[in-house]
Image 1 (cartoon, rainbow, N blue to C red):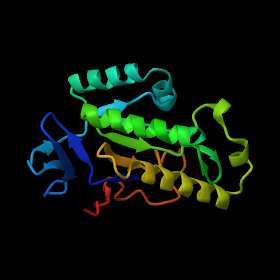
Image 2 (tube, rainbow, N blue to C red; image 1 turned 180 degrees about the vertical axis):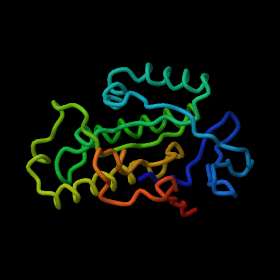
Image 3 (tube, rainbow, N blue to C red; image 1 turned 120 degrees about the vertical axis):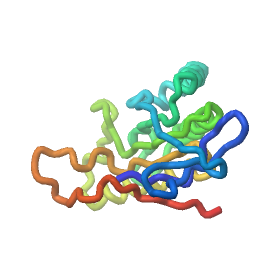
Image 4 (tube, rainbow, N blue to C red; image 1 turned 90 degrees about the horizontal axis):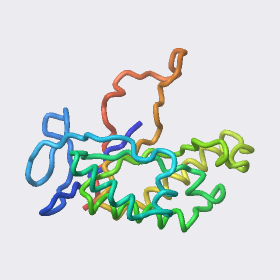
Length: 191
C-alpha cells in the first residue's frame, strides 16, 4: 500500500506541491500545473542512515548527482531496527539522521518515497521483535509509522509512504484481492 502525501517538490525558484492530476491518472505541480512524473530509484536501500552518519558530504553529493541526472524521486528504506530501540522506544539519534536526510532531499529538490518496517540484514534483527506475537508486532509497526509520520510531518521532502512493500509478492493466490491495487491512497495535508 502506498500513500501519496500532499508533498512538495523543490526547484530552483520555490517549492511546489505535488497533487493528483485533474484526470486522476498522474500528478501535477501546484500552482504551476506542470506535469510531475515520479522517476527515480532506490537510494542506499539498506544503509542510508548509516551512510549519512559516516559521510554526510557524500550523501549530499549523491543527491546533487541524482538531481543533475533528472531524478525526481528517491526511494529510501529506513530500517525499523535502526529507528527503534524497543517496542515503543524510538532512537533519537536515528531520528535526527532521518531529519538530516529529509533536509538534504529537500535542498536537492528530490522528494522521498519512504519505505519502512524493513529489516534487511540478519545481523540487525531485533530479538525483542522476533519474540513478539502477531498482535504486538502490529502494534510495533504502528508505532514505527507514527514515529516516521511525526518525524517527517514538517518536511516538504516526502512524496509518499510505502506502508506495505510488495504486499502481493507470493507464489500462492493472494489472501486479499489485488483488484484496484493500481489506485493510490491519497492523504491531503491540513493546510
